[in-house]
Length: 445
Image 1 (spheres, rainbow, N blue to C red):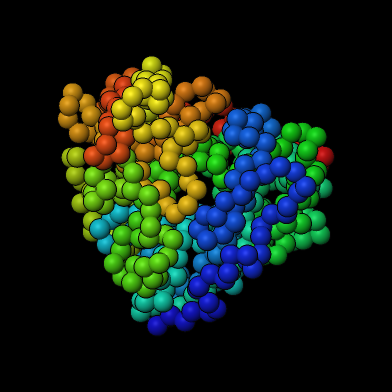
Image 2 (cartoon, rainbow, N blue to C red):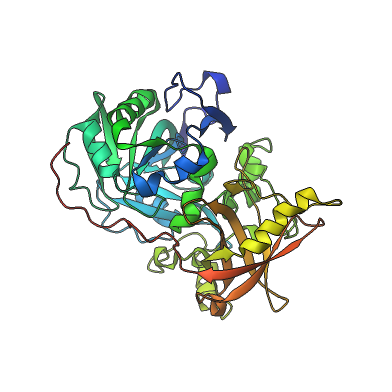
């Protein structure tokens, strides 16, 4: 049986260490997941341009990291992940996908294995902790409090080199190594959610403010932005990266055993079930790896949790995939116009994301129609100031996933006034400039 190390109950909100410093400047903050997060700094327009014009620094994924070691650690991780994890040395990152018995995604996030046999699973919730504690594997599981600062945009490599004084251009995609920033040893990994050049910097939570400040101060002159939680989710939709708790539900929260283990008052179990889909429809708010275009992360060369269900899904003629949906501007304007008309208005579209992720998990799901027939689910609705367009992610029937296909999104909340919005299937990802391509060796700045 597994052994748990340390407490799994969060400390008092005001006693928790922060991953970022406070500055004597105007800013707003919010509590998400039981922790203070930076909400907004220079405004959502400027922040949403940061990963196209220069770069940003964001710490919203800081917090508890699941750690695993012990005699059965390799077997446990192989059973938990749909990925093939052979040839997994230190210095390599994997986007690990974990499913439930039904083949629906329970958790996903970056997984790292160290030479001492320990694993760390970042920003994925406590699913691996739960399975380690309740399973029959001889593993030890615990949580470490770590900061996770994301630096993304065309000048992100330059920004980290300015802060560290070291050439970091040798770090390939999905690779990591250590360097020093602000006198602290940090892990630098090449991965990001914006779709373009991006990195993560990680270390013990108590080092977070000093490392953050060093990166920020070293790069103010090149236009680095402090990206807040309000605008962060725009980059997932523009960059084509589906995200649990935002574009689809946190699958672990639907598992009865997990719910009992974590406690019914845990924030992860209280999502905002909005949208034109019936709130009672759990399936509309969950995804298989195939439905979010992660089929390459499913390898049937080993036994894993959810394999039987995914084998059936892979052979099903009724396949769905995720696409970008570009919304008709006239229909969006009509939604706002209803605020100035008598009677029930349409659901308001907040800027730049709807619904805003200001508390709990998001489980928004809107119905997608083709010629009156239900063909998919829309979620992750954003306004892109860069493109001057409203976009969302659509999980739709595969035969409709060709760019140019015209569909209808039923915008609104179940049982309330609904607006049929014309949408067009477009390229996925939508942001194609400055993709996360190889970088050439560079001199330190």
